[in-house]
Image (cartoon, rainbow, N blue to C red; front, top):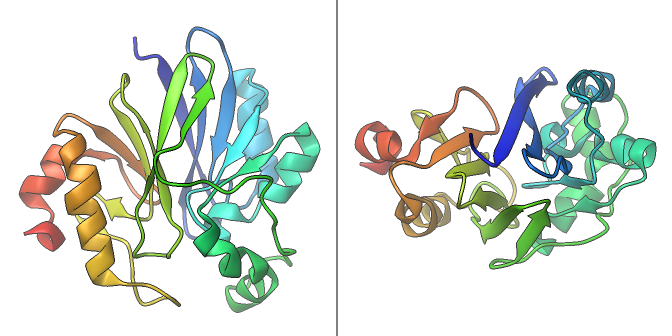
Length: 212
């Protein structure tokens, strides 16, 4: 059994994959990208018998960070990530919520920003932080090497890649991050994207039209 156990909870009208992850041995738990629908996430945590120790954000878009403040207050835990370069997006949460017709969302100030090369401990799990800009300038992903699992946010999808038509998006940067940082992790790595079904890096390397 993999050390890293996880459950995906689709949230918001954008069907964003919020991931509840935990260490199989120690039980320590984190929530990745709670984009909204906080009651749904709390219910999933309660059903799984889990109390999170931290909230991890891949980037500053509302459908990934919208419920972070509520969950952090509920459980008394820190919000960690993304990279500081996404601060402008988290500062603009009220405008984002208005633009997408979401309930009002206050600006979000994480307890800690993340940088390339950091490693976060969760029980026996080691989550490596990789900075993968392009979809947003401060986008990070979380890789658990022993379990061969990657939480890729909106960088790569099954058959697709992240949109780059948002403020400070950059398609070339995105493709370089995927080619230079993600694909070298190994064909066997399973990634859980921000939207849609999971896949493997090997399958995408062979079939993803954006990586040809």
